[in-house]
Amino acid sequence: MTPTLVRQALPHAGTAPPAEPGARARDWSEIQERMLVPLYEAAYDRLDVGPGTRLLGLACGSGLALLMAASRGAAVSGVEPGSPERLALARERLLPDTWSPRARTGTYLGSALPPADRTYTLVTAFDGTGLLADAVPLAERGSPVVLTGWGPAERCATSAVLRVADPLYGGWRPACRDDLEEVAHRAGLKPDGSGRVACPFGYADTDSAVRGLLSTELFDAAVEASGQDQVDKEIREALHPYVRLDGTVWMPNVFRYLIARVP
Image (cartoon, rainbow, N blue to C red; front, side):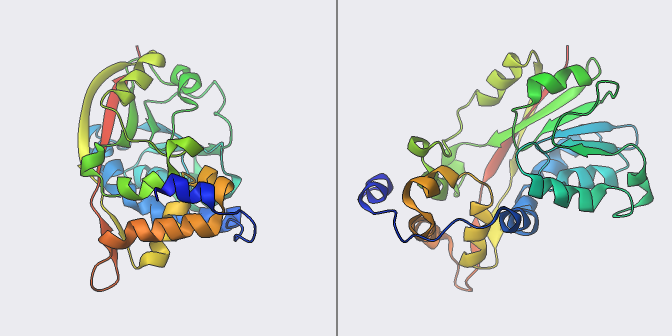
């Protein structure tokens, strides 16, 4: 039976409830977020992010990408509208008295966009573009905006696992060639270069892999439809080909980034 048919056949009663939001946010921060470090680094290297950069991160999660930019000397601000728990973790990392003296000046972290009197020289949308159109006016003319997404499904081993969160339930779908360009055009931006980055997903064991993947929230609709136990089972089955002899999980992936400019 296909995963979809399995979900339709199983009853929902008796399944385990989803993890608490705080636990999932911690799993994102401690397990999953670091998988995208090569993507963040590639974008920052290409744009020479440093002391002269004023960066606004959209859907900044628990703040790892902002922390990396701040370590290069950038002034950082971030918006996390979807998860108060992730936002709280980002504040632990970046706000006054929790990191370094550099973070004591000008850092903004909130669930809504910063005040209109702030301007930025770089906007990043590493994990979502929902606020993009409203954020563009905060960027100076000619400033770069970084959009990111999955590479071709055939070059992303994790795509086999993400099919558990199939589009029927509002989950993940394979990337299309021009997805990022279409987002840029809708926001009034002009594409100005792109690149691909290897971002393998590596986990200490299958349990960590399941927790990390569930923390992406891509499986939420499938959990709602068929229950936590069934989704966990399907994820573990999909992970099986990527479990190595020592019990670790390794899935090679390619991500794509697009640089667009504010007109």
